[in-house]
Length: 129
Image (cartoon, rainbow, N blue to C red; front, side, top):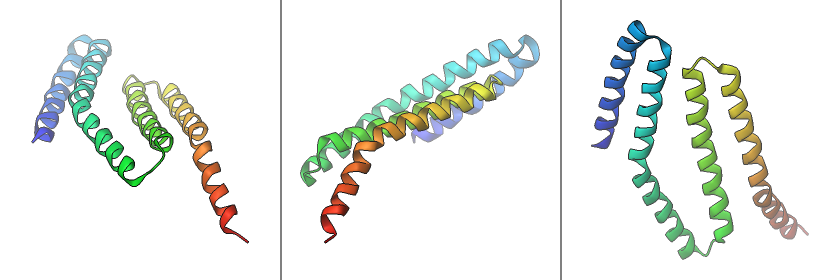
């Protein structure tokens, strides 16, 4: 299973980071952490593509407007990228910047969600007498 490979990579990297941090400081440890985080993300890209394709196929069969699916996928992407970015900032000890990344993601998600919210409200209004 891939999760064992990813967990093994993460545990190995963690042990190396602890050793490097003791001998060379935080800069090298942070660099290793960034490389391992990016590697894990790249390992998952194939699976992410598969999920997106399945969702696209299902939405097409269900007759769902592609605009809504694309918007939801963008929102999910923003959430994942923001989480990754904020965790990297936290690993570097920059909690304030991490919080700003999360705030920016929330604002971007809200902006993207507006057309969906409007469509839902319009549907509700049409159902009311």
